[in-house]
Length: 232
Length: 234
Image (cartoon, rainbow over all chains, first blue to last red; front, top):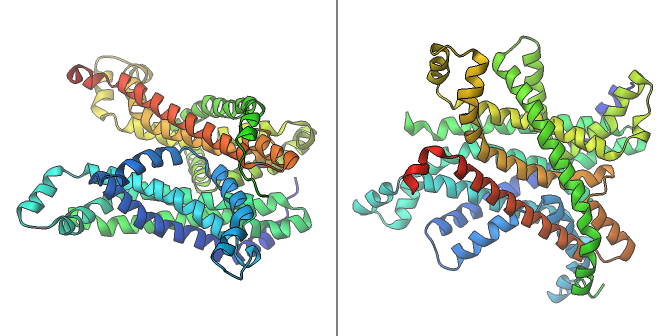
């Protein structure tokens, strides 16, 4: 049994260099997911026609597709059709000018949209219906009721499940490596493939992901304490 | 390049791909069967809190929760030979099927995730129930099997279903260690014929159908086990 500490360190340093890509793959889908997912959840709970029917079909179906299969499909369509789309918009750019990270961002954002909308819908449904009626009774409009009554209450309800979803997102960013997008895992494997120290490379990547998820859990604990303060 | 999707090729791929679903089902089966056993053991350790072992288990669970499945698969794939080969003088990196490494990873992973589900289900049962079991003369184990466990199973069922679908999805990653499952076979079709979109779409459709079926099945199961509200509903 021979594990080279030196190789782990080298892989770790190389992986940290790719941290910006991984953080982009986490933060952008997370932000898009929270904003769009919450809108979708409201659309479904308030039963906006067409939109609510569409999403109540689309979300369970899309959640049935493993992220790796979705990524492989998007990657394929991107490789085959990107040039055609650019030509359609009369752009002088070609596929070589576009970073393939957009494929990962798209797949992960769509995944987060579905996950967050389910979480927010559950949180919205957990709020007593009487609260909405009480808000109308004191003369608030629907938008005011959502902003002042509903949103402050769904945040603390949603946070514990959002932790799992965000940790799931961080772990899913490693899968974009399978379609050749540069991020932490591929960064850790750069020295590994040169020195043939794959075990050490994956170990270094594992430590980095582990630290990221622990940091996310701590951040959410802090947010939970802050946002739930009105309850005490 | 022009024709990305051809319905004839899609139909042609179905009989080729379908048999490889068994590889995903096998992973699901082993992960669930041995994962439940390991999960129960881990849950017992986490509730009884024996010194040393408890701390080790805490680190193990944190690691399994905090690192991606892809990385865990690769760590087992490259790491298990490093541990076992010198110990027993075998050469498992060459001789074992890649699927064995996949099974090992999924069992270890499920042991961690299922133990959390089991613990939260057991802790959801009011403490008074086990005290009542003691007071009528049941031993600790009897009380667990006859009073606590039947109720805990009902509580654990919905998160177990979610976890089950998660394993089904994660099992699509095993192609990276060389297991020929649905995705692995679809990729092979791609490199043989140059047309792969149809194969991927069929794989996606299979996963969607399986996930929906599992979801409906678990929904029906938890309704059936919900003996408390059964009388009122009708």
